[in-house]
Every structure is written in structure tokens, then in C-alpha cells.
Image (cartoon, rainbow, N blue to C red; front, side):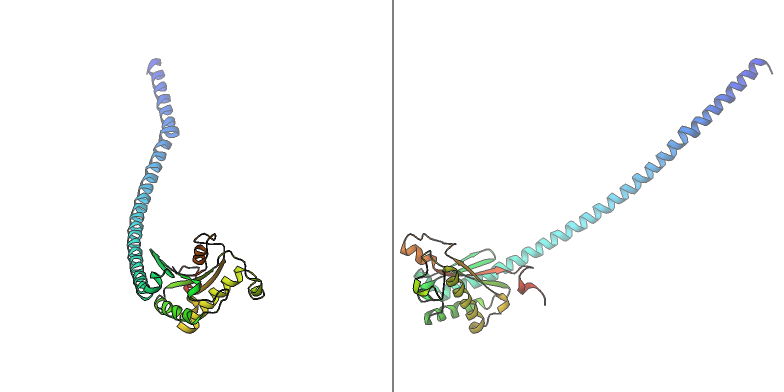
Length: 240
């Protein structure tokens, strides 16, 4: 073999060695890395596919739940509308005289009763007429076992007469006593479940009319009975 051939062979061997080294050092790891990337991509594609299926399933469940809740809410509103209609019929005379107003907003209902038809002036005990009025209202409300019945006492801004201040130091105490007496009557005499009933005192601080005129003050002296949906925080809604 000639010297040139020998040199050529050596160069060829070196090139092959370098090529092999480059392959092992650079190309082979890249192939391994590429395979790992492809495998991870496949895993991610599978994971994304599973998430999309899960999301579609949850979306279907949510849509079904919304339909269910909407149907229940519509049924609840419809049932309350029946209560509203019954109260309108039962209290027709008082409504025409402006002594009672009844309003419904979606799943809530409010009965507004001026104080003069149920309480003596400056007192918290129900009158004979007041007992009849609360019996009529209460017997209709008794059917709403799925509602909280909140009785709110309100007054005008005229201070309590000095002769009554030992009994009612302020309008807070008067409105509280009136609300509590209505709640007790609805429970003890009408038979409404006590767990449905709440009493609240607002005194003079939530007027619905001006206190500058006798007519406005008369509107502000009132008992409001609210029918509101039960919530998870409502005592009646908590399982014992």
C-alpha cells in the first residue's frame, strides 16, 4: 500500500471516528430527546382529550342543574303567586282603604299593614280588630312552609310620649315589641312553625314616606311581613 493510500485510510478512519463520536455525542441524544418530546406530546394530547371530555361532561351536568333550578324557581314563584292572589282577595277591603299593601317581587312577597288597624296608639298589644286581621293574614301564610316569615316593626320619628317611656324608652322598643307580639300571635294562635318566624325592629329609621305630614307619618307606622326564601344560613333550613 502506498504512503498516499495509507494517509487516505488514516484520514478516512479519523473522519469515521469523528462522525461516530458526533453521532453519539450530538445526534443520538437529540433522537432520544425527540422521542421523549414526542412521547410527552402524546401524553399531553391524551390528558387534554380527557380534560375536554370531563369539561363537556361537567358542562352538561351544569346545564341540567340550571334547568332543574330554573324549573324549581318557576314553581316556587308560581306557588308564591297563589299566596299573593289569596292575600289580595282576603284583604280586599283593607287594600281599597289604603290600610294594607301587598307586593310580590319574584320569589319574595311583602305585606305592609298600617299600625292603626292592629295596634292602639303607642301600644304593642293587638286590638280585637288587629287579631282578626292577623288571623286572616296568618292563615294564608301558614301554607308557605318553605319560606322564612320575617315580621318587621316600623314607627314614625315622633318620640315616645313621656307617659310611655318607662314601658318603651324609644321607638326601637315599641317597634320591637310590636314585631315580637305579631310573631308570637302567628305561632301561638295561628300555628305557624316558630322556626319559620323572625322578628326585627327598625324604629323610625326606614321610612317609606315623609315624616313632615300626618299622612306620611301614618304610612311609616307599620308592620311589614316579608316572605323570603330559606337559605343555608336560615335556622329552619339546618337539619337538626
